[in-house]
Image (cartoon, rainbow over all chains, first blue to last red; front, side):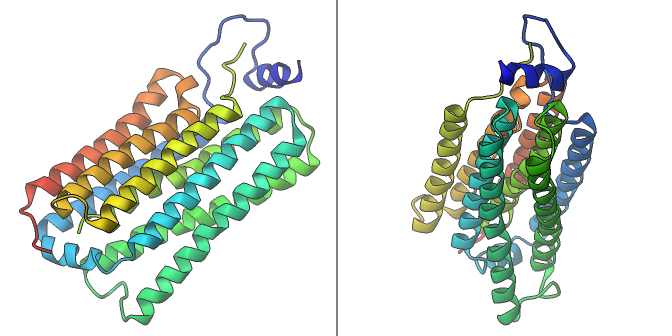
Length: 203
Length: 96
């Protein structure tokens, strides 16, 4: 069966009958994800300490953020993450058509996050709210800005994966590429899941 | 044999739960359905932690990974949520 064959080769295992634990993709990507999520944990801690010192400023500033746009971005990233997971499953089954289709959809849906974020930044700047307005907005622009950079890198990763899905052999190496890229893309989603209540909902 | 990847129907069910949770929290926050903003933030943070666990386990396939990786990332989500919640309840409620 082609599915099993690709999976077995991807992990370097053959002939075994028991399922053994396996990290999806390249372990180096996971080391990077661990370091990156660790850095964001530090950002979260700094923001939280700042909020403890000035709760009124942080609460009134959070009320100026658009809950609807934050929610929309969460749904966009979750949908894109789901499509990405479907793309990885298709790669593991050796189904090139579904892999390409799901990757393209993950990219298109995910791009909505960028558009919404740019719209939100523009609204804030038009209202005279900038990085220098107060400490909350300094953290808001820095945290969402760093996250946005991760998102842009993720878009680049998806473009590379799309090109590989079109040109490369459907083999174990391609599966490892897909799993590694998908893990990065899910990290962007994961970070937003915590950023959203941290910034938008502590009112 | 390596652990099989989750089948598409399973991934779709997980996505439905994730989006459902997000919309439910959004509905509560928009309507002011809970007594205080602090309660809304608490519910949202707990839901975010649950969603992070689902993304880690199912989309990132960590439920098929060696336990140390699972503990590392699930612990990260739990620790971040617990820290933020502790600080949220530590300071007095700000009148809205």
